[in-house]
Image 1 (cartoon, rainbow, N blue to C red):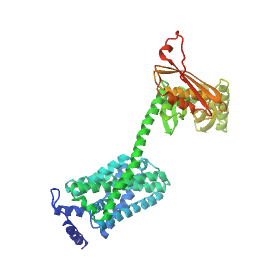
Image 2: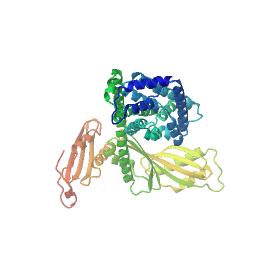
Image 3: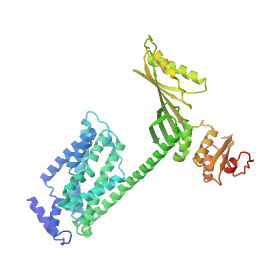
Image 4: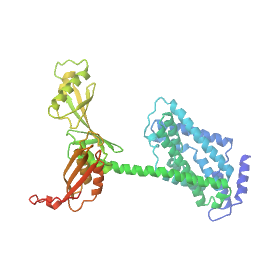
Length: 515
């Protein structure tokens, strides 16, 4: 009975259409039947049953970090149908049908979110794997995919000969997995990550609605844009969908640009780190960049260069506030002497041996602070900090093993930090670092010397001697940087000498003032 009424309604509405080269009236009726199905009780029961099953599969797949299971949830998710119905109804000015479809989408989305929260709470353990985290950082690529997939879905519905592509469309632009990920993250109290996955769902939702509407108009299912304005409310909805899509595109574009810039910066930093290490037998295991702070973890047999030198290299990339922390792991095997009894407190005796070792190297001018000693079965982990790397000491591992009374692996982690904002950084070091960073790898400019006189109370006099082939570019920038490098009043003088004069050491060197 309802089907008959719906068909009569569509037939009556189709009288507004005229046959054209794209569709005749009967074909449009068939397309509308597929696009705007009758949402009776049976249809709603089937819809929410499939949606519930899809959310269940999605939550389990995300929790298990299984790509195949998540794809299964995408394939049976029914949310695409009411979104297509909404776009078609809005485009044809069918207000009541548009409201019905919007209500189904809204209630279905809310149910999916609540149900996924409940399911995630029932899981015995949950780790945030790549399948969840991969849906928390949408960018402009996700919007482009959603627009293309929405257009493909609308075209496939309008043309039965390509309807076999709909499963591929469902996988390309997933609606249920982002909702399930949002519910899981809310359940795990990861609010920031949940915002990202919710943004991905909103991206897919509005992009599908917008691109489906445009595709139905272009392909002729909606004969003319005049139908948009048969009802002023529907016209407002069309405009609202467009504005929402553009509004979502703005932060996504910003994310993409920031990600691209961050990737380039990471690559530049890694290049500088490798140049800083040179030919040393060292390998970078971890490189973390947060703002202007860089943490480099390296392993190998050679002692790493000073963090100061790396900070100098990174100033052109990160700015004058480049902060560097270097962590170097040195590992050695130690064996206890025969008959050595095991120590009652291995950590205490190992700490005593290490303190004696630190006292010995202090007398050699190497200052290190013992931060942490951890002893587990067969393993001694030591963390020290200081301006210079700990010297190689083959006997240290054996001494620790003798004290503990067991064969051990001694792992010494040296942490070296350089923070340009530290108040105790010598002024001459800061000036020298900034000048060298300003010169960078330019072959036509050399630093001859830097000098700093004065104090923060009386003011500073900074003198920089350069050798250059012609007038160096960026002298004003260097003056500004040095003027802000020290507390108080700073007077900066920069002198340059022709580079060819420096290359002839027997020639008297004129020193014209440029300050």
